[in-house]
Image (cartoon, rainbow, N blue to C red; front, top):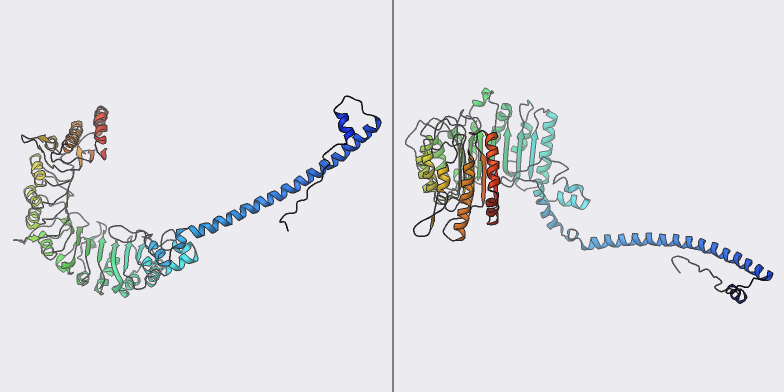
Length: 543
């Protein structure tokens, strides 16, 4: 039986012969013929009405058929998509692994960047469908990263809600090691002990603990938690930036923090003021990443000998960040060999530059495999007095690749010593509010052909340069340096091609007047800059 019933309409397809013959002549029809022709007109008019009605009916049938066709095609497409979609063919185990990569984590510290929210994993994944929700709830690692923020204006109800969130994450994470970032935004009188008690209850589960506290009462309740046994702890970061006007900020760290016995501890970061290093006892031998920084310039910093005593116990140290600024009272000091050290950052505090502190540190530390070194002075009114010791330190670090000097006051004659000592660097950054990189030094970094046909210059393998300029001539010298380095690189003369350069105006100059000069000079140098890009320059930033 047909899906749709369509009846054909029978039509008279021929006229009577007498009428058809009459129509091809000029003969006037007779009265009989006239009556017959009028009858045929009426008959055909009825057929026309019938045809119109049938056409409308068939068009309605066609529209329904077209609608049904579209629906069937949509169903087929949905079924084919369901059959062909890779995500639907994935087993739950693989989908669970993909879910883990949806977590918003900091690449370096592996702590969560977002508070629990239905806009982010893992809660977002459970809102897609019941299957995804079941998979997300059965994936413990999805719930092993947690960030909690206690706002400035906080009530006990808010604290209790945060504790409940923590408990939920701990339960859903099963037995997987946990990561917690806890931020107390400050100056609240709410009791945080319920949150800390939960941390203590699951002490053996914590792999990463990252605390930022800004309230004295919160600090007092924080440190007793470290009396617990954190057997799985790998990374501990405690940062406090109490307001400078808060006199209580000068108190020493409670001794509770010194009793960390986790043999799995690898990363330790403490940012505090009035820290007593002699009271911090952790398994130093296992530490690979260490950061000890003061949060209040000049108010405190452990003496260098305290740092050296600790560094002696850290043979596996790979990365270290230290704040230097206390008055030295003890000598002699020990020599420290750090064979695995790759990255070192030193930050001098306000009263440091004219003392023996930095000299002692540079003389004592030997890091032959150091690859990155950053030195920053937060405040200095005089040229640095430790350049000779720094030069010797750089010579001992023969594998150094990245050198960064920030706000360090270097005399013009000392630049060549530093760059000669760090001959293997590929990245050099220099920014200072006191001096700019002298034009003579830029010229010394520009290759010159020696008598044996080889090119000689400072930092011959340099690939990235970042500095400040105080006159337009510096820009032209840098472009000349790039051109000659590219030319000598292509000719195989032992000089690397400079691929990245950053140049910004120094604070020592008036930028409005100089800006016009620089603009005009750059317009004149446009062709040479384009040629540098064609030869391989990747980035040139001129602010």
